[in-house]
Amino acid sequence: MMVLRKVISVAVLIKLASPAFANWTWISDDMLITQGVSRYADRLEIMRAEDCDGLRLRAWAKIGNKVGNTLKRGDLIQLDVRLADVKFLDQTKVLGIAYDFDEDFDVIYLDFGDWHWGVADIFSKNSDQSLTATFLTKNAIIDDNIWALDGFSGQVERLRDECKLKSLGVLV
Image: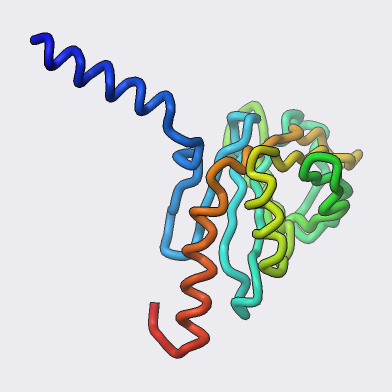
């Protein structure tokens, strides 16, 4: 019984001490996601760009006021996406809106664009930081969000390695 307690105690300590990359999840062979702090519809998606020259970033966000939401697919909205003090993005395109996701709020799907692999390197070097999004549109009240980058580099290498293999003609 004493050994079992020690094993359970060690397992709990390991779980508490594990790096936060457990927050990064593969939901398909080519899509890596993490959840933000908003807690509802706050997913950041990272996938290979179609040409494999870099990454494609997309995000989900919560629109808290259904009545005031006048956004539609294709709209461009202003926002402020930063890594620490460095601004990365100031405009995004609405890819879609789920009006019936919940009776209290809508969910918006946003295109953060395609980025060269250098952005993945910047995110990796700053993995102790977070990516923040502040929405500046008047067409809806969108919850701001924060996505931790802990453990990002170990996960994104898989995307980059598969692109290297594709360039060599290897099926992945």
